[in-house]
Image (cartoon, rainbow, N blue to C red; front, top):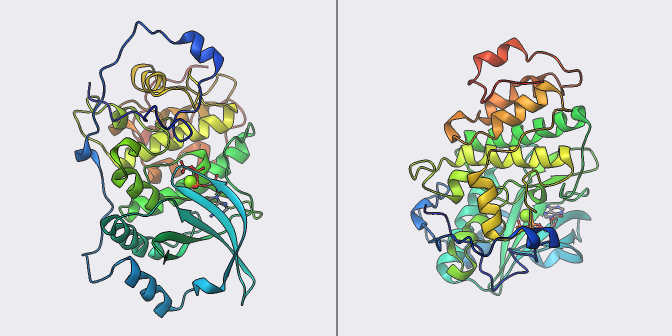
Length: 356
Ligand code: ATP
Ligand code: MG
């Protein structure tokens, strides 16, 4: 087994919040797992443009030349939230009164990392889809990287319980539209999870936070390299032996989407361990046990949809484009238990027969 590096125990605030009491009771100290090594060959970088003369500083100048937004005209107001990579503030552009989200990336990064982030943001600036949070610009403010983002006034979907299948179908359709767009452009997100799915007052759901967080995850101090949680990662990404060392980032995103959607439906993390549990418990639950399923009380369409995402074998997962055709999405929710739509059988074979 060659799983990826677990989160360091020395940084509990970041990746390993204290396990709940029920986890502590369940933990078996007589069971050990081999100490995993980080496998850098697994990194799947976005296609970057050829490195030009741009540096972090010149990228900032370039941004200014394009006159997107003048950094000095931005007024930071309240802090919206913090994650493992940075802190997000609400910011107002004084001349226009427009509101943005400003993500301030932690730490001073060396030139190589800053250059990589800048090049990636150049790509992200071209990303334009109603279901992907717009990345407007980035600034290098005395070595501190700040990313100007579209502001989503409803915040993230973390902790949401959405038992209504029609609402969930609409939400899943929007996320899939954004994901299909990114995948068409050969962009893999790699960090799909509820806190990276944002909503606004118009009920638009958008995917946030790709690119920069991922670069930081790959480039930060190895002791901090497992930025974020593995809770939404696919089994083959955590344990590289599972798929002959092959990691398909597109299929990985679909797994993460399936876990997130099922979590919304159930109102809790769908595995038998706590989402914030320790690395070994999470790894065991995700890699060694049967993928979670939607409860029997859900419609057949929804259960089938989840099963199409949560396939252990990555090649059996449907793509974002295929899932957009799934009856749970195209029929706007399941509702009544019924036979799956006939077209379903033209898609990839469902993992397990549907049982009622
Ligand atoms: P991680 O760092 O592991 O991805 P995270 O997603 O919670 O965790 P951040 O991306 O830093 O961390 O975001 C922190 C919080 O800020 C989010 O949970 C979200 O509520 C809010 N947020 C992020 N981006 C925006 C945005 N564009 N508009 C409005 N709120 C945002
Ligand atoms: Mg985030």
